[in-house]
Amino acid sequence: METAIKTVDLVREFKTSRGVFRALDGVNLEIPSGMIYGLLGPNGAGKTTLIRILSTLLLPTSGDAYVGGYHVVREAQKVREIINLVSGGERPGYGILTTRENLIYYAMLYGYSRREAEERVEEVSRLIGLEDFMNKRLNELSTGMVQKYSLARGLLNNPRILFLDEPTLGLDVENARSIRKLIRRLVDDGYIETILLTSHYMYEVEELCDRIAIIHRGRIIEEGTVEELKERVSSHVIYELTLQRVDGDLDFLRELDSVIGYKVRLSDVPGEARLRIIMAYEDISRVIGLLEKKMYRVKRVVRDEISLEDVFLKLVGRGIDE
Amino acid sequence: MLGLIRRVLVVVWLTFKEQSNWTSLPVYLIYTFINPVFQVALYGYIYIAVAHLSGITSPEAAFYMVSGIALFNYIGSGLYGVIWTIHSEREHFRTLKYTYLAFPDLQLYLTSRGLYHYLVGLATSLAMLILGMLLIGYPMLGSLDTLPSIALLLLIGIAWSSQIGVVVAGLSIYSSEYGPVISESFGGLLFLLGAVLYPVSALPPWIQPLAHIFPMVEWMELMRHYLNPSYIPGDIGGLWTWLLVKTLATIIATYLYFRLVERLVRKTGMLEASLHH
Image (tube, rainbow over all chains, first blue to last red; front, side):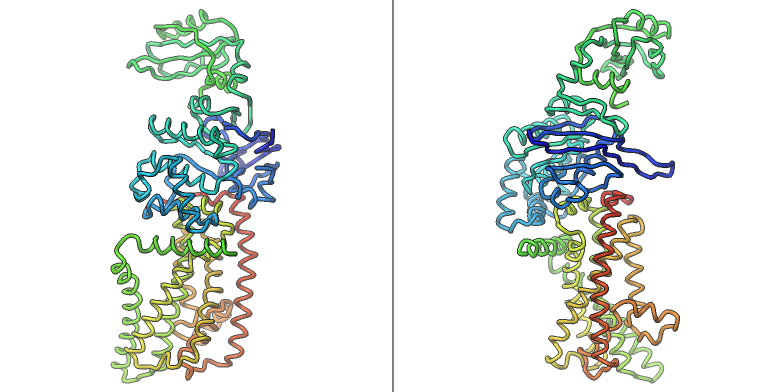
């Protein structure tokens, strides 16, 4: 299978007032074409930095990166001709222009004639489901519609490779679901050859991506399909506990050799919290004992199936949003 | 080539929309013309008031002043349009990075964004010259023979001033907060040094070499000459030579400078940096 994106020992450092911050620390990736590839990691892991380098907006400090076979530094213009970029949580565009005018403008920036641009915009707007909003000014669109507009803009030049940086960031559940459906369709129906998607939403990556790389502190710490990643923690034991209260952290759990990682989140029931814990071997009785010793009341204990979240817990030792 | 021309034209269209879309066309036209027209009226009135109080009239000085502010309006409009692009696209519209990916050359894009402003500047400058002529009564645009030279000078004016704008825009990439200040300050510097209200010889001797760095002095004096051929600023052939040499040097230097800026911008990630709003 042809390689769409390749990075070799990619490093990116930023100078800050507190010294040098290494956002990417020797990233090696090889992404085959014809798939949605997910880059999963917490905020600040280096996902966006990687996308910025691959889309030629940022130079690496060292190492090499190739997109569609072109070097992102030496052949930047060739890279730009085969890619596009869509970032979530932004409202880029000329608010005083209508959606149609914005899209025609961008299509013409890519070199289309007026007629070609109009045709391309119509085609893309149908695909994305923007037809009813084409005559509205961009500053009148909802956040969800703006993101659809951004996605449409990202398709105008018929890119081979599309970078989606947190495409559902800031969207409500319904809009996020609709965007995810669209993204899947783009590859399944052959509109885009390869998508590199970054996200810190587990379910998004799990639902959309054919392969996943987990990035943490600028390093790729695991790579594979969802099933492969789960398989790698299949010998581990996962429990979900309902606790009466959680104040302060539960780091005392790490005193137990069996505990690899845990994540706490609030329950739908007021005053309750859910503790998800991943252990190297069956040791739940000691976990409960330790919790009760620390005055935590355990209301319910359920042994659970392995999820992508558990893979992350195992690799990083904490939840993605902690 | 056709694709590039189309791209430039759509950028001009965008700038027109950006400038005019907030209101109806008649209101926009009034807004566009009102400031320059009142500006020339103000300078004209200052001249008339000083002449009235002192009893000394100098239509030559009045011509120098009125033509200066009208021509500076043309250069200043375009320059401002080029420089302001970085601020508006990166800070306000958040489009700079997407434009960078879509348009083949950022330097050409910035220049294209200035083109509409030069067109508006040309129309308003013409209005200023006509009003100034009516106020002061000094002959201007008396002969059609000079029109080709004026047209050529207008194009040369775009060539050097837009590239100076690109240089300043390159500086403003590194400062979101101070980008607009840099733009205003640079316009002020050219107004001060560019033979707008007075000849360079009226400046303190130590600052005169700075005024001669830019092609503006030669350009202003030649424009004045072709607007009113009885105005002879010196050796016309020499002025043309210096204007062309300096314009060429500006274009080459800007090209080299902007390649460096672009590399530095990619190195620092400043295309996306938003420090304002």
